[in-house]
Image (cartoon, rainbow over all chains, first blue to last red; front, side, top):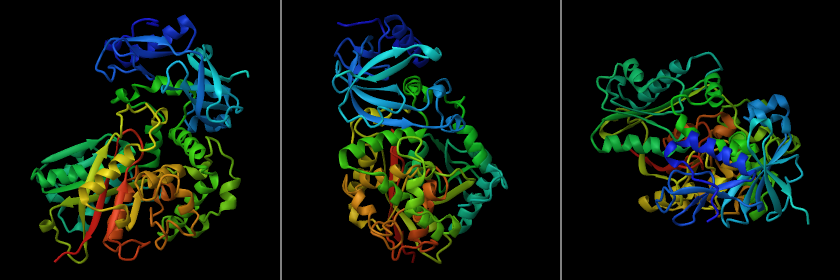
Length: 148
Length: 376
């Protein structure tokens, strides 16, 4: 099993989030939550698998994904706060958020950030490469158009 | 429902006033109100305080509902359950928030219910912004699937704006045409400021009671035909966006199916609709998922002139909705439905007999079917 460590489901949401970020920082790649019992995968993580198991681990999300949807965010700094742009990401404006389906985990979708608006009109199914970024004191999943 | 000029009446003052007006309209004494249902997203007072201000003789049933814009049907359902079970005789449902208080609430964490932030650490760090972000993502999927364009959104915005003007919630000078809509710069997905609701001071209230307790028999009343709630095919947490799952038939569709099955009615029986509309796309998605038109066919529906007006193909949000007339968590749709069915709307659909109200397409939502009832 591709495990990057135990997901501390009994320690609650805040600790799970802290552990999520720590594991990404350690392995420098996007991760998902994975059930040891049935191999179900989740993002965001949960306290229980849909099979009922609490035996959850972290696993590599892989670096390849396909675009499901995109949203361009083009706000001025003054507008950013009004529209709840995360403060630590405001300097990246304009940016695009994407929802992608992981190639490693078919059917599982995660959200990621792309700098600029170049991905805003990327065709459905376009392949992107995922990575983790640690600037702004955040752990941010980044999507970039894959080189053809 | 009252919508005073901003900052002229407090949230508490609006709440009491709205409840008093609702009781007067129903012909019930405020002292006989023994049940209260309110949204937890409210900025006025506790249900205990409301009982005190009404000089209520007893408090037999109180509840706060947490689903925000998904609460539309559940509010009605909770009140009805209390009355039908004999727990309470006269239940008032209310919601009151001043614009200033609403802005404060939505821009800061809920310190008393931090568990709503259980999954916030994941979408937000990917740049997810306001609720418009969710609907922008869903619009993108809808557009890719059905070819939906920004023009369709424009027809929603201009149509509901026209309804708001006809109903008297906006002045004539606020009329909006497609040229103005299309020229506005989008800032989140396809949405410009026209696709977003206005923040207003508003309070709404309605009374649920047994028919034999109504003392105002000068006009028809409203019968609750069916109510329903659903989380759709899969349960999800607050920030676990439906955009992460491929569920074209989400919670709204589940609620609609339950409503029609419970009531024996069908979509074609609906004379007037009150669809949650925090954004232009939301209204569009609601109409499709509520089975009032087929998925992917909203474009054609919206292309008809005056489609959502009182004489249109689908009379909907006749007061302008939250999108056209200001945000109320969808509560105004219940008020407008009651007005339509009792023949007292300022934008009246002729012979409206069946109304459908539906909460927002979040992770848990609710709706109701209401029917005009002539009193003997």
